[in-house]
Length: 195
Picture 1 (cartoon, one colour):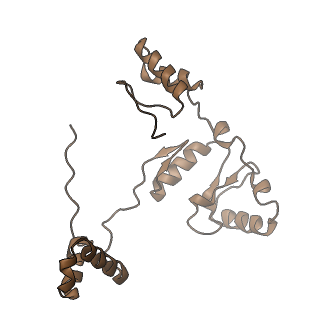
Picture 2: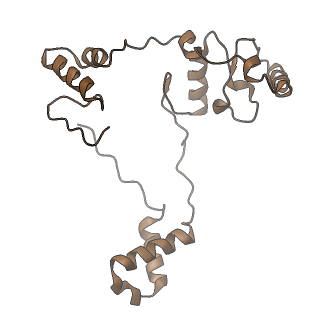
């Protein structure tokens, strides 16, 4: 958002473009809903997401691997070995791959949206675009690890900069204080209930 633009009304800022924002606010004042005013102010219809719109402008496997037929052959062999059928209209999405040339990252042209959603859910991948999936990659708490010595030293130096009187203290004590305050041994603060 443009920091120079101030929202002087009770309506949310929907655009950095002042004309779009004014149009939106006028529509809201006239009684339009947020969704309708936002859509009309931006002059774009609500999204209609289908497999065809998901794949619009993307390339097929043959086009993706046009200059690398050897890797296309390897991908197809891996897919067949795992019982995954490959079609000419499929697309390979390396961001969804668990390993190089992972056949599970082949997205079929028909049913592609549901395939991507299921794959993201299975792998715990957060997806917030044309397909929305809440990721769950952290099934458990992160393992304990030591703070990097250079980060501890940097924090000690900042403490001394803020309070020059600390320069006369034993640096071991200051390092221990930094580790105690910033280490990941601390439990996360409990979440406040919504409401």
